[in-house]
Amino acid sequence: MASTTPGVSLSARSQMPQGKPHSINEYVSVKKPPHLDRLTATTHQESTIEPVTIDVDDAPNGFVPGFLHMPPNFTAPDPFQVHHRTAAILSPEPAAALSSGIPTLRLDWRYPARSKHCIADVYASMKYLQDLYGLDRFVLVGWSFGGAPVFAVAGAGQRVIGCATVASQTLEAEEGIRKLAPRPVLLLHGTGDRTLSPECSERLYKLYGEKGDRQMEMFDGDNHSLMGNAGTAEEMLCEFIAKCAGVEVDEGLRRDVVETELVDEQEREDLMGRGGDLRGLERRE
Image 1 (tube, one colour):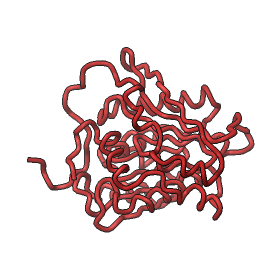
Image 2: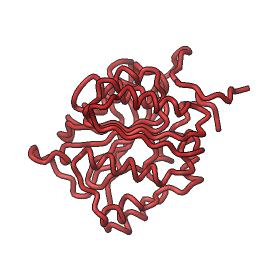
Image 3: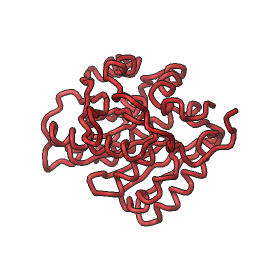
Image 4: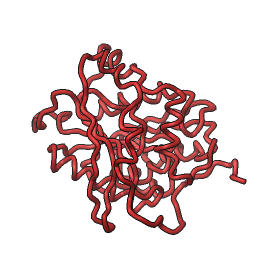
């Protein structure tokens, strides 16, 4: 029987899974949010969504699968405008926090909960976006175990300009977040999380220190996926990404983009189950 006491880590210690990483063809069902047409109807613009397989050189035949959302009329970055050089990498996260005008890559881990390989996934994704599109500033968003590689990569270099996490673990995240300030951080967690204790985000908040821009939001009674406050959490993530990129979220953008619900509650639960359950490593709530 699974324990009901929330932990501080979901990192795997078991033997590595055998076989090649997943094919991008297995991800057709999560290629785009179920109701992306709502956003198109509101803004009268349509983003392109491209399935990508990004080579990773730490294993034979290694690639990380993902979906790249490109804003309408995207052009090469202007070196004098910061937000044109910025991309968001969500790893893994449902498609909600897609900021207008900011290229967004949703990637899935090749080997979930194996930090070494997940860190390599993030680095490979950053290189892919820089080599193909000239994007060299990154906002990283991680859910659950995803907080560990997000903070590890951010702590190792300055190309990451901000980090946000949902229900992050602490193990393998602590060293990186100590090095993050003054770059901004956003920590979201549910107080009813039975998978990873909300004390994880509280500890990360303290480790970040007082010399930068830190924000933590605890959602009373909510679970590991923030199902009860998904809309609010997604708005906060979207605004955080835009702020890091130097994009002002005015009332028009908030109405047309941030507040458009792309995934209904049951659909969100299904997406989290497919894309964020760490291949069965987590306890179900």
